[in-house]
Length: 94
Image (cartoon, rainbow, N blue to C red):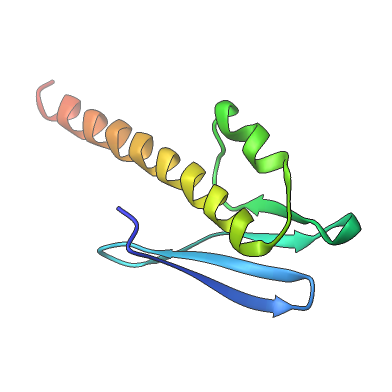
């Protein structure tokens, strides 16, 4: 579960998006200023096909873009944790 989202300015046109959960801080991606002062996402994780339209969209600001990236990351993490749990539990009973 996400506790806090932080935005770190890398330069005038780039912002890193970090998520803090119970255990650590994850750098989940960045947004870059694109044409017409819109912001484009660059995730640092595998994006589900259902979230690709959210990732490809251009946003008015880095915070708006970051919120959408966090939604995609939370979906990714929920399935990543489920897959890992099933993998290890399944191996214990072989």
